[in-house]
Image 1 (cartoon, rainbow, N blue to C red):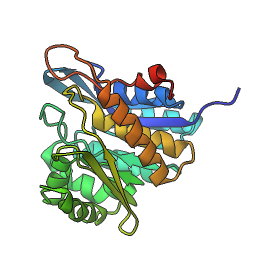
Image 2 (cartoon, rainbow, N blue to C red):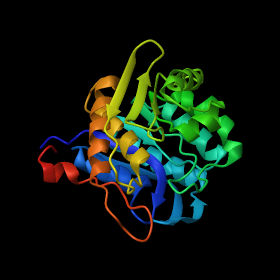
Image 3 (cartoon, one colour):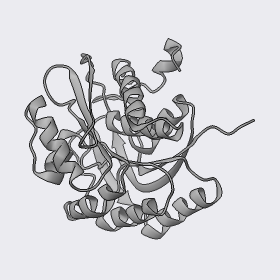
Length: 266
């Protein structure tokens, strides 16, 4: 039997299972790939927020990465929570030495507004991590942190994309989910543009949306799809997962990674 495409996530753990490594691996399974993981941080997290976070030592992150890549190999890598400048720079170095596309989700804060990246690490994200990205997937808050560009309407998305691309990723997806109206994202490499629209679902249970989108893009790239094809398919997948998101605990519940199985589209 032939092994499925192999996708590696380098990210933090979410003890509540809604985001982070857990969301990544669920997405990878749902999309027919073999998910592998490098744990960068452990969080105490639930539907109400992040109660604590602890970084994994750099040498442990490096050892996990080399263990997987040197034996099993990867066809795409996705990064999430990296927490500190030292971890950002270590992961950027590892990505630069890996012959596989990289999807960088520059995680800055959780769904609940809890900081997941030290302020001192922002410059390392700009100068080390983003240049190693095949696709970067910042949301509007992350765009503002990284570039100073504040997006108030769709008209600002091009300006935001240009500001992120200036740091060196080949493509960027500016996620406009926080704007009013339809959920619109802009995918561009500075010359080609793709506007990805989806109806906005009246569902507050959206924990893990960003992790899920970035992981789904990595799955598409691992299958040999072009960046526009991978991002378009990922947008469709995450839209379905948001629509099926469910209540869990007393706060914001997770998106549903299994929706495609039940709908027969997986």
